[in-house]
Image 1 (cartoon, one colour):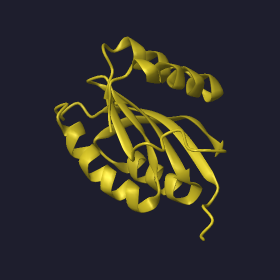
Image 2 (tube, helix red, strand yellow; image 1 turned 180 degrees about the vertical axis):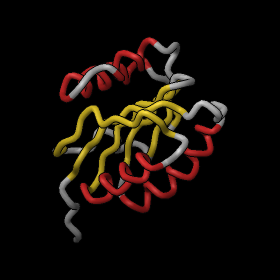
Image 3 (cartoon, one colour; image 1 turned 120 degrees about the vertical axis):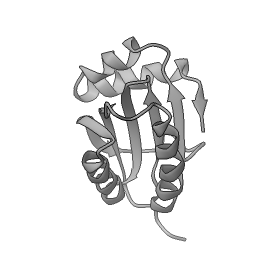
Length: 134
């Protein structure tokens, strides 16, 4: 029986590059689901038509490597880590990478301006309002 590595979580916010249409998000998610599954990463990506907020969880090394790739991806601009830290148990065990579209920009705008534990708790509180496609 293999022991699972300690879990780590990152909540980041970014903005879709101006020259890209919103359907680009579907292509990002399709590729990410397969890659994340291989790395033991689960999470939720919320998109409001302009801004992303993504909560990632998994083995620390894999999550940090993914965050590095996201930060270098030209489809994301203004990438900012709002929260990161150790995690005692998965929050997204029911699916690999969930995708939700936020109704209106005000919900994600609120998360975008918060930092640390406040940002994480605000994002987690919003989850029940999202129609999640896992």
